[in-house]
Length: 294
Image 1 (cartoon, one colour):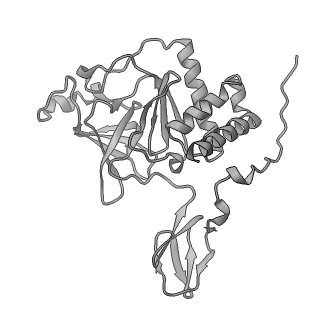
Image 2: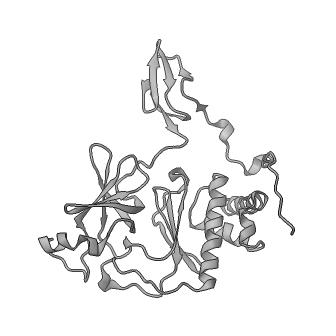
Image 3: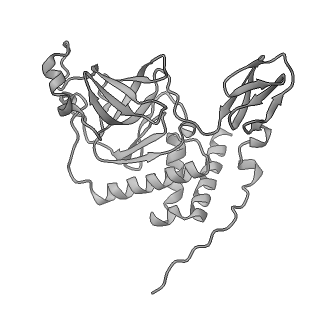
């Protein structure tokens, strides 16, 4: 029986015109001396030793006037007010849910910060508190927005909009939060027939585009109808495209994902995970993005 044998090889360097200008960035490792000038102020990711400003994390040096800080290349999600996140319920507590959002601490979703089924606007009662697991329980995936940030860095979420709430059938892809480009909207209905939520926290949710939104459900109703094979194939191809873009450190937003999807149509879905095919479709995506910007 024939088997597909694959051997690891060194990755070829991409042409300089399509590579981001990393060479011009000041990259440091922990313990590296950033500057010996005592006129600079110490920011995040730095410390002083023997009148030298040193890096405490691996990352890119950023300077704002006299303030120097190091932005880590890989870090947990640091949320800001207004960020769209995708998270998983980890615990049901008194009048609140704990949500895992890829940040340093579990986020909090208060019972008063969700829509009640039917869209009722009233104070939450003890009956609502007893029925919390009927709304959301451990393991459920949700989309939400950051409402505020506590003093210890934990995030307070809310789902007071019909576009947020419990997520149904789909695929969750985890990427680095730094690869998700900040846009005005992170909910996209792509032309290929699927929808995507690009969470600022690095969690990407791909799901079949719903025919209609049930406004009476308050964001808690999820369809359990079987997903057609054609939709599952589109979702699988989108998942592989996002993994390819993430592996090659390309920013994720609606245009880059759609261009990558179109570039991958020349290959079978299973082949898009092969390193040489990933490199090919990402190179084509980068070219199209450069042409669009130019």
